[in-house]
Image 1: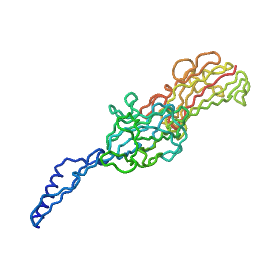
Image 2 (image 1 turned 30 degrees about the horizontal axis):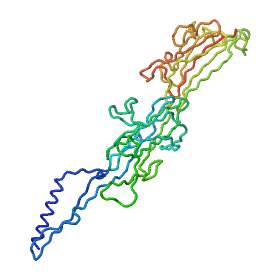
Image 3 (image 1 turned 180 degrees about the horizontal axis):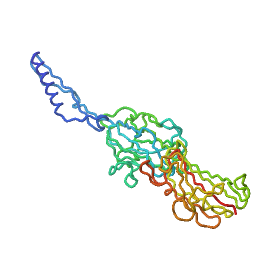
Length: 393
């Protein structure tokens, strides 16, 4: 009996050493499908106290292959909205697709609008020209000319691919608009160009054949155990909210002067054009040009006369610009611009009647590094007004 115990102890020691020396790899997805697992039992015994030849189990050996556990996970990356501007092209939602199964697989990809905003807002528009691309790897981040694959080709078990939903934002959208999209990945036969459909094995297991089992969980818009998974992300429009208003006031006529003046020939009409970026707007606006075509029955007042006939502006400077709510250096101080076409920021084309007033706003609102302004920038809550007079003919 002691001899048998000693033999068993030596057998266990050698078995343990063998296992430590045998290379193995821990995989979150488990043992790769197709792996052959062979095992046999060995009986050690004695007859009359004499050790006999060990007996192994029958058949010799017992074998099977590991089956294909199809599993995958789609996850959006940012955890919040992707902010975009109206009329912007190739805007990107970023996802990962992970092969959590135990077999190399292709994955077909599709993106669909989702009326449910994953971040709790209200989906209220659809983007244009929605496409799906796979990260190619040369330059990280979406590159229009590099990331051209539309399916994931032969993704190893435990590996992850980055996938982009790419779309254009309509010009008509305003700040706060939301477009939610769901990316769905579907497992396909490896090397099939993303089109080889997998069929789950029904009936009894076949030990020496790689059977297929769908093990995926339910995603945002898919059911469990269908060889697919989905997750959602959303675009949120981040934009300026501009308004432009124009008022006119008769300030003086040749007979009543500034007391109850009327709109008669020779009267002075004051126009005030106000451009505002609404408080709470999502972004600054970059103003470029404003134009105002005057009626031919009026002529520009070159000196911006006041109601009493005086002028606060230099002679020949018929345009005044005022800023409201900004931190620019000219805040609170009127700026005057010549009425003649001198390209100083605000100009009239010189026509004796009518004509066109043009404001070059990148000149009127120059770069200011200290307060942090780019040329023409009007931040949320800020306004700029342009004041000038015309005379009724």
